[in-house]
Image (spheres, rainbow, N blue to C red):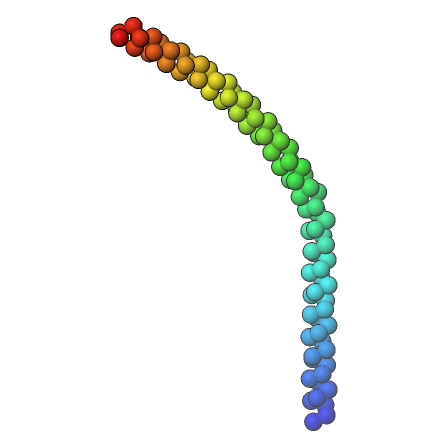
Length: 92
């Protein structure tokens, strides 16, 4: 009976040893992948920041053009309103 208990304890300790070995190996893979992909993540961050800056400049330029077009449209509308007022005065 005593041998059975010792065998079970040995099997259990072997199981824990295998689990620790597996955990250590998985930690090594995790460290490897973290080191391998860290430069890629940094590049991705810098590229995204640069792209956002360029898009922001393009959007700013588009808004400036829209502002100029709106100002021209206001001038044209004022001219049409002035002509309509002159016609109304001439017809009365």
